[in-house]
Length: 440
Image (cartoon, rainbow, N blue to C red; front, top):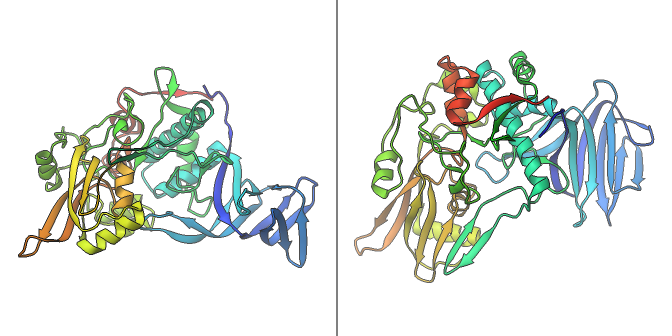
């Protein structure tokens, strides 16, 4: 188990032919040569060139690293955030720590930021949510993020990181791990944890949260907890096994997101009633002032996270499914949920067409297939509209929640803190059976 603060390698940009940015202050390469000002890395034939001002250098190594002197920082231009999600955009971002640029086999460049774990966490909790959030929420999120990261690194060292895809008897089941991150520990986007350097405002409250919880982890049965989190559960969190591997994780089980117990929504009748209701859940809020306090600016654009609707003309969804799944279903006839978890999230969905019928799962694969980016969640009921001859003309998906639903509900946890609940209350609610332990 971890007994000292590690250094983390974070993948910021990948699959680029060039990487542009600026050194604010002096950075030194392995030879001790100082670099400052605007820079451009490019690759041709597996060889990196670095342009700074009027100087163009050919670099002999396939991974070039430069380290800051004093308080120097670096910026990267055109960093993509929210990859494949509905808020995807590009930003200029500024980082502390070292910069490495490396060539990968397909003759593209990857930019990696290397820094101490606690410095990394200051950016994560200021990027995932707002740095102006209540202190007790920031503390809870810091412990959650720290625990998740160390659990992932331990699992990466010990296990095969394949994300299985099963294709048999017309069924496709897939969950997503981190198998593509061989050259760094974590990426900087929602696939792992949002990390946007020092671009976001890191407040005194964030520093207090980091300092207060330094080296503090969620643990269970002697191991660091794989502490997952998501934006809004929709009223009830989900079991781990319904989203990732088919294993029971005792501290990642479905809980009601509120002071009272809400019934599970496993059957279609239960899901219909649940998604058409508005229970007094922690994450069920339209308090715009509170949401401005806890959500980053681009997340504030999403106002229908607790209950939502997406509507597709039949032909539109046929085209979308062909592009996302590669399967020609022909004329779509039905979307039929087969299995749901306690939060109402669909685990297996049958898609019936005139040419093919396929069952798809798990949660994220369903969300990928049914949206040009990703559906907010797989907790939805289906309304099928037909014309006078009984032919399907439109599918309406009425849904609940934002994200996979496992573990800590970020908006729910933030609302708990606003209501006066503390870090231990929040963590105990979302991770039942886990305890806190200081490891360094």
